[in-house]
Length: 197
Image 1 (cartoon, one colour):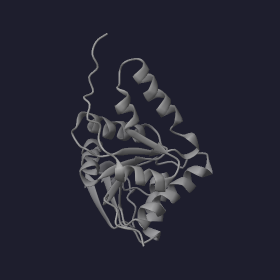
Image 2 (cartoon, helix red, strand yellow):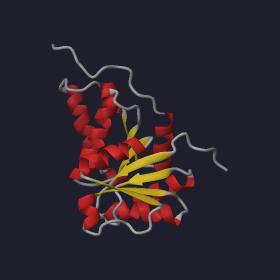
Image 3 (tube, one colour):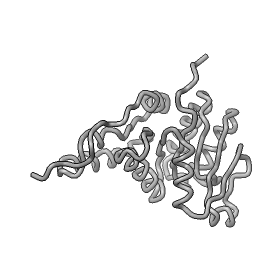
Image 4 (cartoon, helix red, strand yellow):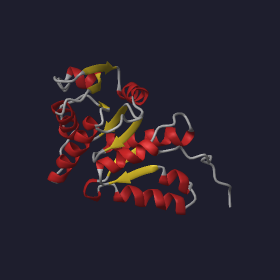
C-alpha cells in the first residue's frame, strides 16, 4: 500500500478536444489512474469534452474524487459533466481560474490549445512571483511540450528569464514520475529580475 500523498488535490489543465494522436487519450487516462491510485482529488474545468472528459471519466471509474469548476457560459451551454463528485459554477473564465488555483495544491498541464497554455503559464507566473508556492508540471505526451521547453530556454538565453524559473516547470513523460517530482518540488528562492547588461 502506498503512503498518502502530501498533495491532496491537483488541478489539471487540458484540451477540450481529443487531438489527432491516440496517445493523447491514453496519456490522459494514465495520469488519471495515477491520480486516483494516490487518492488525490482531481480539480478540472468541469466539462465532458475532449481530454477534460477523459480525465474525469477515468478518475471516477477508478473510484477517485473529481471536482469540476465551470464557467456560467459553458454551464448554460450544457457542457457540465454529469457524473462529478462536486462542481462549482463561476461567473467567467477569470474567476474559474482563481477557484481552480485556490482549490489545488499543484498543477499539471496535458496537451491542449490556447486555454491550456494560458492556464499553464498563469499558474507558473504566480509561482515565479511568489503569489503562491505550488508546483507546475506538464505531462509530455508524444513530445507535445518539447517546444515549450525550447521556448523557455530561449527566453533564458535572451535575458528575459532566469534558468531557475525556466526549470521550475516540470516536464516528464511518466505520470508517476511527474507526480513524484511535484511532491518533492520546492519553489525557487531567486527573484525574477535580471540586472541590465
